[in-house]
Length: 306
Ligand code: GYE
Image (cartoon, rainbow, N blue to C red; front, side):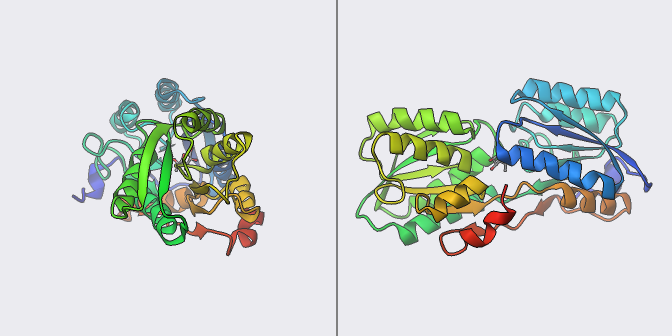
């Protein structure tokens, strides 16, 4: 459904905007790179930027948006930590007449709708990312039987839901593979390591790890090495993001693939906001195209990584 532009709160064309960016957490390189991208864009885009950090709490993220609304922001950029708990923040910004763009994660589309409650979602196709990770695995796995452990992202977040779906659906078609465990590591390195340690006890025969992001993949590599395993040799690691550490792990032969999920949203946010202010119709989903990093190209991209 395409809502008419006039259904959404308008945005004036002016030289400077009071812009809110309500970050969810800052405990990993991806989030830090994203926040930096907004700060780096601010000057050139005429933003007086208010950036907050919810420190991993959806409740604080909602409160941060409340306070931005009270401070009179013109426009809100929101990466909702989880799909449902952030809906109140979207609805309150809508009620306050503030155009909202969801960046990098989305909310439950059955309740909060692009073109109606918020302008658009700017971000990747997570189902496709999971699908491509599975595709790479199916094409490159050399053993007879792939025993897979899946490390899921933050429970209830759109990338965790969709990266799981994209991977599981693709891998189900290939009976060489079995997913023996799928557990959350909250997109965090340390939890990824801990969960991998526990799962290794229960499933010592694991020879594939699919992590929903690079931080958990790096944590899993640490756990595997501690247990005397050889990631890249006796365990295939597939992941998503494209962080510096992941590209280095690929170069070192420890990781097989990482499907890109870029954190550099500042310039795109500026472009889409300006178009919206100019009265252009914004697609409900401004899709980010992702590359894929393997041993064939990791070295070419590590200098621009974060
Ligand atoms: O992959 C992960 C981060 O929402 C796309 O969140 C983003 C994901 C990203 O914590 O590393």
